[in-house]
Image (cartoon, rainbow, N blue to C red; front, top):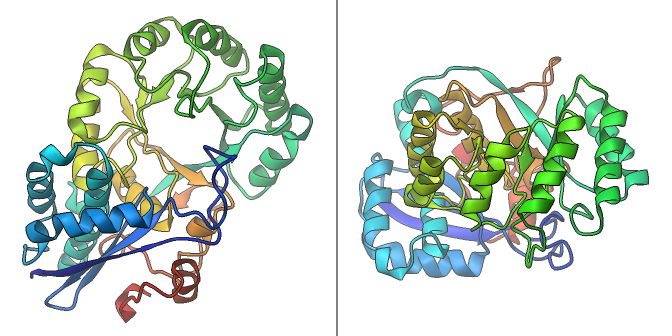
Length: 381
């Protein structure tokens, strides 16, 4: 089964606020769908955390290396793409685009074998996983409403982040967290994301340590991205001194970037993003490396329904990956998936057991958000 072509279309019209909040508009493209077509009619779908101009340019560069390749060998094909584009920059748009191709190839392999991807990765440790609703922070007096809204829908884990946190003063930081914890009570997991990958993040180690002590007092489950993405020494020191788990790694790509952080003990939890790290093949290798260093693997999921479906399959294949990120209120999560997503009575998200990603897309939503640029075969909708 040979790769016949790879197509891409950006998502626009409902891009959610989050990260760079003053810059991203609904019509901006930060997520791109990728479709791999084969000569035998099977089609796989992937997702890339990059705008479509960059992805399309990367696909043109990669085209000589993937055309005619065996679509049933995702790891080998993806590694070939990495190896042959090393000098163009490991970790940038090329790597992001390879992520989408790799996800789509695993989707094809699953369809061809009649198995969910998680089983092809070695076996399913779970049939459902707890999603945590990912929300932006707001002013303390308004923080209760959004967390109560998602809790009422069945979420039993909530992450709040960005917004005013770490960007004003310590009193505001604590008031936001206090309001959220008071609203949801003690039985709901609460995580805090400082958003240290924001442009010109202004806080350093001492702020992060003081804040970590404060968050521990509110039984926060983990403290995410409290420092600038390249502050390796400070992350190491913070992890040793903080009274709660420290997480990060969403800006890192490929296993080579994660290795020094894991070997140095910089994280309690790593959060690679399958839509930019190199896809399922690369994320699995990173997760194995994390296991060897006693670090938990919980995917970063600020993406699309396709990215969430990949995260669910990965979560099924690792014994300690009992949480996945769920961007609450994003049409690219809720509307792209045919029928949406449903939590069970325990606030858990079932992991699809249909072949491949186990995801069917809503054709009207795909048409709407791609501007009619992406046509999918009947099997995908």
